[in-house]
Length: 109
Image (cartoon, rainbow, N blue to C red):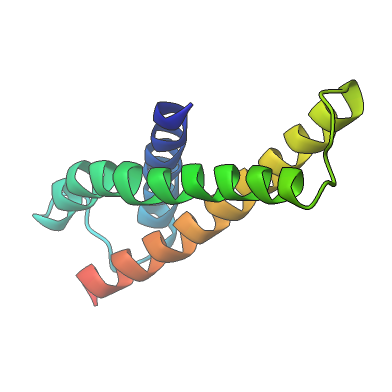
């Protein structure tokens, strides 16, 4: 499960970079910043955001069980945890995009 969080973060970083390289007028595909952004950034995003996402999902799940919101392994609890996980992944994608945009702007401006 932990590796899937890192893979998702790295994938979102690459997709966000591709979008930003097309949107931002100052970016140049043939520059030293491009491999740094994509290669180093991909591994850094996978490590940082992957671990952060994994810890958040585990923490939320633990909190739901501790607060007795989820008490048994039922279909309803599984659906609720899945939806919660999807919401957290969506929030992670937005956070990665914001950090990627800040990184691209810092590198090219």
